Length: 134
Image (cartoon, rainbow, N blue to C red; front, side, top):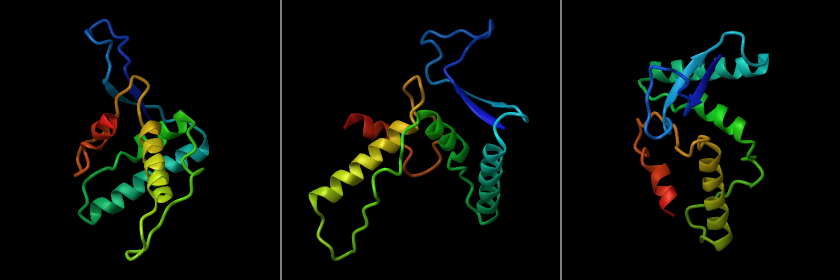
């Protein structure tokens, strides 16, 4: 199973002036994880392969997001989704709930050292820095 490691530099040949903040490496261990975890990884892999056949090349960082959300322990489903019709008026509660959900997601996918690991291959690649400015 693949596991993302961030901000680790226990190698005598590596040197860092910022304590390896932002460094990302992937490690593979075929025996790691529970059977459910391994099935999730296989499902994400199949999802990526199917999308790639349709011409969509981005990985969407599914493995990374699943791992970071699981490690963070943040419950992303505790706030209900807000759906508005096109003609419906936007209320304060809908906006605050949506902003809370977005911030909770970005907090869940933030690495231990403070950066947001990402593939940066889509149109929203600047979303985490923009959220940090708010």
